[in-house]
Amino acid sequence: MAFERELAVAREAASRAGDLALEYFRAGVTAEDKADDSPVTVADRECERLFVKLLSEAFPEDGFLGEEGAGVEGRSGRRWIIDPIDGTRDFVRRNRLWCNLIGLEVDGVVEAGVCTFPALGNQYWAVRGGGAWRGEAGGVVRMHCSKINEARRAVVCLNQLNHALEYPRAEKILPFLSQFWASRSLGGALDAMFLASGSAEVWMEPSLKPWDLAAISIIVREAGCVFFDYAGRETIYGGNGVICVPGLEPVVREFLDLPPR
Image (cartoon, rainbow, N blue to C red):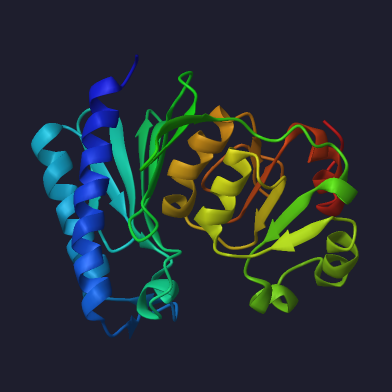
């Protein structure tokens, strides 16, 4: 399998960073506000340092892009895109929904990704062309998205609802949600893994960074989902993101005022 060693190293690094984060999680930490008003803790910074250390030892020619400041230009055409704790608000409030995210980008294309929920005991991963997988206490399971193609039977995950009025199409959000069987908003990465696992059908977030999307974009694609930004582009650099099952892509594109594909 392509990138087999990279995936093994990334999964191990994610597990070790998860163990470190759990120590802080159990002890309790105080958050600081960054310039954009998002929270950060010592756990975020220390976990990112650990990721960079472990990956640099294994792949010294590679570069890095991390939420907490890791920005190294590599010499290999590859870089690791890292979110050491995705869901810091959950982390500081002792909710278990946080995770770490790591994606490997090669010449501008995300080729592998790992999403680990240390407090839940789950790890998800994928390599381009190799399928999407979930590991837990009971073993390893290959994931596939749902085949549901009607909104009235589907689950929609629309995140950042507390900022919904700040974004375009605010007046369309409630009518859009009312089409669906149920709605959930438990956090970006966890909701995205619901889609990869076949437990939900539509996921949308209006404000995202590359480190939020790199890992989950390859995992959901390998599970059979469709991924694009609000402009219809298949990019992690659009500032927002959509994941959906193929059968509900027309419903989402209509909401976003995008032409049918």
